[in-house]
Amino acid sequence: MNRRLPIKLSELSELFRTKTLDPLSVTENALALADRLRNLNAFSRICSSSALQQAKESSQRYRDGKGLGTLDGAPIAVKDNFCTENVHTTCASRMLENFVPTYDATVYARLKQCGAVLIGKTNMDQYGMGSGTVDSIFGPTKNCWSDNLDGKDFRIAGGSSGGSATAVASGVCFAALGSDTGGSTRNPASYCGVVGFKSTYGLLSRHGLIPLVNSMDVPGIITRTVEDCVAVFNAIAGPDERDSTTFKPPFKQIPIPEADQISLKGLRIGIPIEYHCPGLSNEVLETWTKVADMLEDAGAIVKSVSLPYTSASIFVYSILNQCEVSSNMARYDGIEYGYRSDENHSTERLYARSRAKGFNSVVKNRILAGNFFLLRKNYDKYFQKALKVRRLIAEDFTRAFRSVDIILSPTTLSTAPRYDEFVRSNNRDQCAVQDFCTQPANMGGVPALSLPVRLSTEDKLPISLQLTAPSFSEQNLFKVASWIENEVQFYRHYAYS
Ligand code: GLN
Image: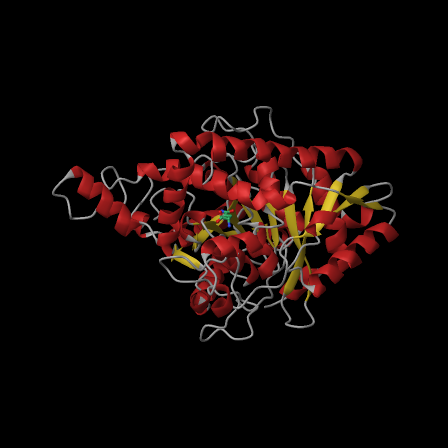
């Protein structure tokens, strides 16, 4: 196939409808590209035969002009912590290396229903615990913007959904699902120069998403453009009887924003003072200021807001994360499913050895810490207290959103670090830096989106900003994101063949 592939999903659908392209050749192309780019390690599994089958069915639907879905024929990828029927779902962990689910996660089932073609499952930090895609049994994912992909000084893709961000940024897929507990969709999106979105908690079903922190997990969407993000969100959002935490009223489809029709007159944009933090690079700060000025010039009211509990957020997140992790991981006992050790001369030994060998040290550390915080003598001191401070962090947003409509901040403090430098610090220290701007939104349950803005002049890597909105204000969030995107047009970097 030598035709230039379009950047956006809507353009792809149009080319399918006019028979200029057909889903089967696009899928073949995506599979070939995924194979050529194996060195990036974006995928934990490529689903060639099922993808070709799905694509053939899609091609047939276009020929018949019947039964077409909104994403028909679009190549997509799904993070390896979403259950996919008959397709290995490993969480990049030895524990689940051979796990083949018998059902689809709701969000993937809905994508399938819309005709999307699953190219593969994507690499991640084990169980989503990380922010680099560096702690995986499949090895690290490499950022496709790296100046050097050999050796160990490549740039990290960010994490924990680094495989999903890379699958989209490298051109293999038009969209990918990530998961976002503390920033795992927005962080890699920021480093890989793609759009990364987490919705209001409860708008996207968690059924079939292997849990990390149930009270904060949300499926995330990664695309090259805001418009595509809205299209995917519309395809998968809404109540699910299999997830009792989904918001019950029917989901109202969000209109695709038309960037040149958007007026920012009177829109109130908040700049959180606490996000001017140590470690913020000059170029990110400069980009942040520039975009704020652009918004102001277009008629928005830009003002400072305070989110005073921001500095407590990392500690609170870490305690709550570890408590929920220790409970979630209890199911992996080597008996029902998952890795089983052959040292089984007693049940206790079997449990202990299966867990010792099945989990990496990051998972084990979090289980131990979580159990410590949940001990009767520590429960009030740590867990209860963390819950109270979490409420204060959520209230920071509620208060700020009384005087502004959108909060504009960095997503990450710098461009993507080099792998060899990144892994010099441990997982906890990595997360403290990487999640600084992203995890408060998970504690507040509010929607947030990372938008690529420009390439750094220093290292030619993507710089992104984050937009955060009140719960259920996705439409406004997409509107502002779309306006900025139209000004900066970062997606033009994806005009490849
Ligand atoms: N870095 C955070 C953690 O390790 C966030 C992970 C995520 O969002 N899945 O917990």
